[in-house]
Length: 140
Image (cartoon, rainbow, N blue to C red):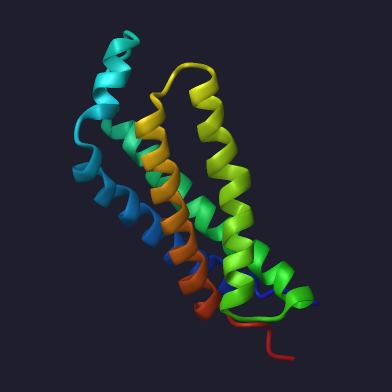
């Protein structure tokens, strides 16, 4: 199995762009609830630099997601089914566990976290499906 690194990066960046755009569209849904949570803990609202970090993290997640797809598709086969399995596993390990931890620590309210968890599942599934369609194997 030879992974097409260039295709992982390009399709992963597109998946990351979709993830980032999805996160941006969630802002009107939750409004300023995050700022209120941060203020209640004596923290400032998220800065522009914080936003840059989250956008970069979205791109890194997109690349990691498509890399994982490229690895797993050799065993499960290429296609949407594999993309959904990989995306769900990636979401569970990255989004779900970390978000539940924030609830357990008492840092985040349950309702806001559940919205983020569900929204995150949608964006990861979308990124995984689109990225998997764009990923091309190495031509031998």
